[in-house]
Length: 493
Image (cartoon, rainbow, N blue to C red; front, side, top):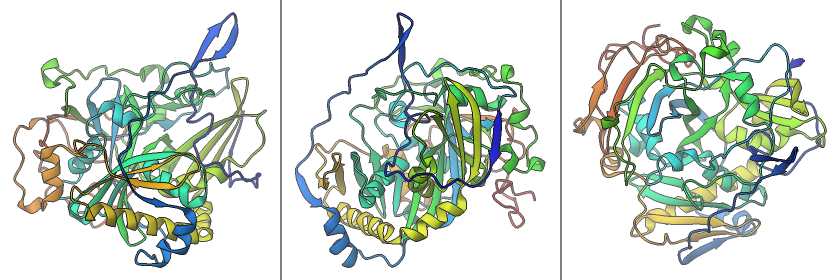
């Protein structure tokens, strides 16, 4: 088996901007007469569209929009800051905050892996929270930042919605559809699939099988199925919060002095995907009707963004191409600086490269300032139109290589947040009393050091709509002067 850690080679460029077959085109296969047959999943019908308000073409964006009132001087991402994170688990409506991504724990000797099988959701957040898909992220944000001011944020988006607009300005042909809702100073981009539980169809590869064999969830977040992260940064004069899913982290990029137990040291058979030792009374979880109630488990660690990696699998027989070349826009948006590229021959992964991508991403940013300024102008235009409407709502739609359409939302019943959380987002945290109805079970502090992967430290909290406060004040005297992203701003350095 060959492991390499080096910059990417000069492959043939590709114009595709997607996660591609392998890491995210994860397969659903059926066995029939000893031959693999690709299974198909029929897509649900698309929800109807509202009346058309405005159409934007790329030519108009270049010649008019980006040169007028929405002009952007520069379009660099700056002031990047980790805000919060959470894990989804095998138990519905359980959020682990801050959670932790799986650690890179390569097996010593390559073995043949079975291709992906099963059914995979297009949007895990919508499936778990169909009424308010962004609510889990906002709850996690307030859980980790009780004094957070929502009105300081101009845009709250996910990598799918932000990436859809980015693909448009880059001339990449791919559909995108999302809602826009403005709350005070903040515009929320809410991803919209045909159904919250829509499955990925016609996929193949080892995008699930490989990480299951080569990465490990730590003991205190076992049973996790997804790690979601929230970053804050400045872009085009806007304060942006971006949510994205992380594939894992490199233990070598995290100072072991701040890790009481490394996830990489856990034996794989001790980390089965279960929630052993963590049980929730059925009375703590309400039926999944309307707005949901999540049971929040405080466990995991705040892994620095510099340690996060994205994972891609490819066949050695596939056309030789620059995998990173096609992924640079997404790495830029999510500020990911590590790529693991694993090539297999009939399921045996003997070629694995670990690449640092930060400098290449910065180079791409410099070389694509024209397109990124157009992206900034486009976002500013969408925000202005949404804020000017009576209900402060829009729908953004694009089919394949078509123009970008701004439409009315059909029906006025789509709300980005539940009533209690909406009130908290719009208020000043110093003027907001604790919201009622919070149940708190505590055992330990929410710090990087004593919540390192495998430490077993955890808190559990059950929250319903509007129940967001009630955090422990044990760290109220913390001193962050000597802290950094590495320690997770523990307050004790």
